[in-house]
Image 1: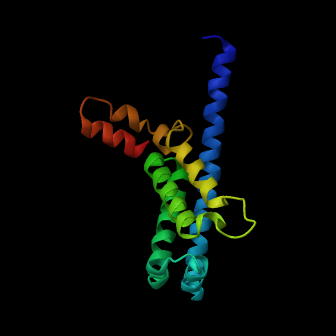
Image 2 (image 1 turned 60 degrees about the vertical axis):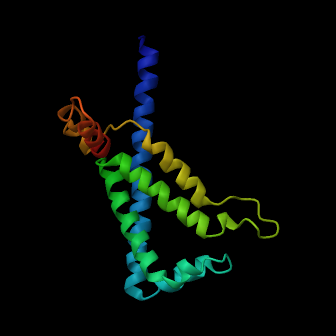
Length: 165
């Protein structure tokens, strides 16, 4: 391997780690906003308002439960991505949350006259999907060498390596 290939690989790891930290911070901030809305008594109205007109009566009728569940998921996934521990399951959960929000929010506005943008929720879901496969560097999992400590044969060890990295 020559030095230009090494630099490119190292730059990719640094870039993807930076993206993980950045989007973890964004997701944590978004989760914290849910707690502020809950404290102010506005969470139910925000959830109901975001699905109005899209036939999502199940979500609208259980707005508090959905709002709190999304808030917990966003907060925990944001923390995990930010610190670099449980990165892959957190990125999967974040992608699932954003896909759910996108789908129940009317697919980013599709069906509205003149609307052509699929929406930011779908873009975030795709970014979190990429972060599932990003290298696990510059985080607690790599700092404490958890993947190496869990090395060995067996599905249990492979599953644990997936979880912590």
